[in-house]
Structure formats: structure tokens, C-alpha cells
Image 1 (tube, one colour):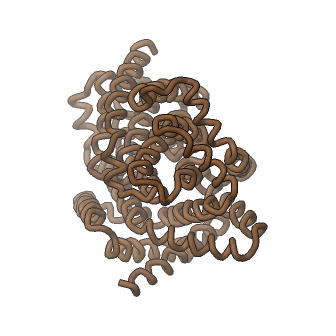
Image 2: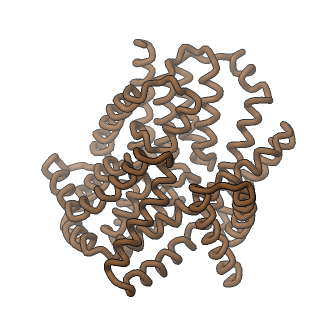
Image 3: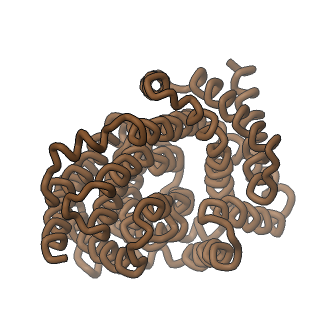
Length: 438
């Protein structure tokens, strides 16, 4: 097992390097080498992963192979592998950011302030802070907030913090142009004005935050929330610098948001560690290595999910699924409900939101169901929010589990399911009403 773990680490580190190189230079040989390394890493990661992860990956692989055989879409497999190395850089960046945050004195001061809060106040502050910062930093906010809670905090406290961060951060995808969700939506609905989707998504996110506070923040008024937010004051300048860096790279370069994140944030972390001295730098690199080794299961799930998504795209294009749905076309309000509930429900059994989001956009975006493109896009984003919050294969669930030291299953199938159900009903009704007006 030690040899397997060491080999997995070496392949992961090589994938990280290949991903970073590929952002600026992508010869065919490098792309093919990255795809081969992804395949090798996926096998090694599954062999060393938990039994639940092995079963989930095996199921996705079986479905993917069956669909590829049926449609002849074997070409989707290498295309998915070629697109996957960037996620090694993503998880590596999370591990480095967490290791760097652990060594910052601002984190210690913020932890002391947050420890004085009661559980409900702390959860409310984490939720709102994760929503605001998650607009730009996305799941990296987990690496910022997790050290505030602390590795040695009681399990119940770490779980509550992880769930609160999930509620806040995942709702950021309703209106953030920096999430992969928005990028996927605009591939299929390019004519929706960005300002419209951001305004609508921000309004829904505000409603969601209120609903979450009513469910989980009993006894915490505005004063309690203000005290909670003040507890994060010491880390806000650092987070602001990281957010500004990602925004600047996104605005001034052709890098995607994910590419800006995996190039800019590590550079910022390394610069800060070098300034703290060689001992801190070496300690953080060792912690990064340990953190990266702990995400092999999550990385394997993501690779298999992305591959399955590519294969299903071919099924939709060639299998006549659209025609079958058109023959039994649901009304517009039902389509909205199917999108939201379908993405959330399928995420619970391991179907990644990239897969379901693509399916919903391809199917419902091409059918004359009377659904406004604006409403359809926001419905997909709401479904993506829920899938990110409670989907067993979601990157955010993986990040929350890794950063707060909790099993994925407890993060995905925990208290947030109540929020998904309550906010889901409200969001479906609101979007159906808006669609009737448009």
C-alpha cells in the first residue's frame, strides 16, 4: 500500500505540473501525456480509495462504457481525459492554500474571535462570508475558513461549519460569473444577458440566505450575525488580496476562472511563505503533500463523472432522446421543476452536476416548452447549487470534507437536505411565476 500511495503522489504531482504547463503551452504530445496520466491516476486513486468511492466510480464507468458501446462514442473517453488534468492543479491549489492559511497569524486571531461565538452565530457568519467570498474564490473559501474552526475542534462543530460554508458558498453559483456552472450554461444559452442572470441569481441567493437563517439560526438576530461577521475581520484583507488577484487575472488575461485560480493563488501563497522564512515554506509544502494525497478519491470521482458526461452528450446527439421528450413535452412550470429536482436528486446518487446540467441544457434548451432562456438558465444554476451542496460527487462536497476533516457522506447527506427541500420549493415557484410573466 505504501508503494501504491507513493506512486499515486508522484502521478498527481506530475499531473499538476502538466496542467500548469498546458495553460500556457499545449503541444499535442503534452495533451496526450496528460490524458494518459489521468487514466493512470484514476486507476491508482480508485485502488487506494474508500469502498464507497470504488463502487461509485465502477458504476459510472459501467454506464459510460455501455453508452459508448451503444452509440459508438468511444472518442468521448480520451476527450474527457484530456480535459481533466486541470483538476489536479485545482485540488493541489486547495491543499497549498489550506497549508498556507494554517500558518498565518491572522487565522489564529480570527479563530480566537470566532471561538467566543455560540454555534448558531458562528454558522451564520460562515454562511454569509462563504457566500460573498465564494463568488470569486469558489470552493477555495473552504481552505480559508476551515483553519478558523481548527483541525482539533469537536467533530460536531466541524460538521456544522462545513454545512454552513456549503450553504453559503454553493448559493454563490446562482449569480457568480466565475463559477463553472455559468460557463457551462453560456455554452448552450449564449444570448441570455449576463446582468439579467446576475440580478435574478442575486435575488434568489438573498432569499435563500434568509430561509437558511430561519431554519438553522434560531435565536440569532441581526446583532448576532454582525458579531459573527466581525470575527472574520482579521482574514478579510488577505482574502481580499486573493480575490483581487483572481479577478485581475481573469480581467487582464485570456485565462479562465479556474486557470486564474490555479496559477495566481499558488504564486501568492508561495510568495507569502518565502517571506515567512524557509522553515515555514518547507512545513507548508509538506502539509500540501499530505493534503493532496487525501483527495485521490474525490479526484477519481470527478474524472469518472466528467467522462460519463462526455459520453452522455453523444447519446443526446445521436440517440433520439430529444425527439422522445418532445413527443411528451411537459408544460413550462413542470420543466423548471424537472430541471431543479432532477439535478438535485441525481446528485444524491452520484451523478455529477456537469453531467446533469449539460443534459438539462441540451434537452430543454432545444425544445419549444415555453420556458424563457433566462428562467431555464437560472433553474439549471439552482439545480447546480443543490447538487454542489449535497451531491456525493460534487467538488464542493469533496473540498468541504477534505478541509474540515469530515467524510463526504456526512457532508452530502446531512442537515443541508432540509434546506435543499425548502429553498427548492420556493425557487421553483418563483421561477415558474417569472416564466409566466416573461
